[in-house]
Image (cartoon, rainbow, N blue to C red; front, side, top):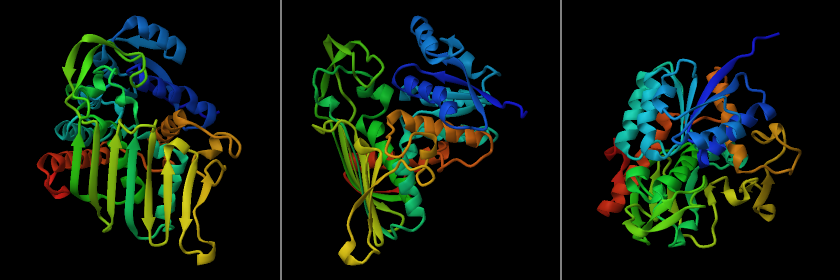
Amino acid sequence: MAKDRTVNVALIGQKFMGKTHSNAWTQVRRFFEPPLRPVQHTICARHRDELEVFAAQWGWQNISTRWKDVVTNDQIGLVDIGVPNHLHAEMSIAALEAGRNVACEKPLARTLDEARDMLRAARKAKKQKTYVWYNYRRTPAVALAHQLVREGKIGKISHVRAYYLQDWAFDASVPLIWRFDKKIAGSGSHGDLNAHIIDMCRFVTGEEITEVIGAAMETFITERTLPSVGSAGGIAGGSKGSSKKGKVKVDDAVLAITRLSGGGLATFEATRFATGNQNKNGLEINGDKGAIRFNFERMNELEFYDATEERRTQGWHTVIVTHAGSHPYAEAWWPDAHIIGYEHSFTNQAYDMLLDLAGQKPTVPLPDFADAYETQRVLEAMSLAAKEKSAIKMSQVK
């Protein structure tokens, strides 16, 4: 019998992302057959009493409130970072310097300077692997869109329209949780949402953004109550405000027009103030041979238009991306049209990371620190374009 190959995983963070990552590590071997078995070695966060409950619920063997001890523990093979943005750089760099592989939540960092430091650490640690949890790449419809573009089904791309629309921040009673705190988050909708659709555009099209032609950012609610109770593990649910108020110094919405390396144009809209949109995350890509549309609120569907068909039968058709053997990751889950959900994208990524750690090819490319740094450069260029009210070429952003 072949020896059971394992990798000990340590997860830092046990709120929203802690739950999604824990679920991924718990489920991955129940549905896939990865070449490495992930061992849920240690869960790390600030509050020991919460950790004891969390570890028992999600199957973690050990708990710790000291992240520096965790990342330097020689028993750990992969450090999974699921904490707010202000800790990404310090934790990732320390883990890499200690010889650990690192999987970090998105965006890569609060600022381009921090992201650059992380990239340097990754390049210096030549033997270690780095990953970033841009999990929407692992949605089967988005992975299929990536494959269709690579196969030439769309042809030369002229337009990309990317959007990420939520509405939870419209409620003025939501307190100034960390997502509204510039010192912790770095930005608002920009880093929280726009980072996802920038990565999705780059991933699906295979093209880079060469210029931000123009951008605008706006903060609609400039003051919020300071939290007396933080969120209960979701975005803002369970949080409560106090009698004191603080300034909101991050963006609530961002719009940008950009130019792609293939000559086309791409627009981006990200906001947490789009009334009636819960988590509308998607894009439309138009090419001279076809087009695709994706909306995460209908995540098991990809719309495809084949412009090479004869004109009398041309039209949009909807692909239900659940057929094993035809659609990415579908073979691991349920029979046709027995749909999957948000959490499955993380499990799909856990599987691909285990493949990569074992020296095998992932289903579709994984974003490492170098890849995520390019998205961070675009975030910076859009911020500069909005601030300076002028076009910013990517060659200006190093």
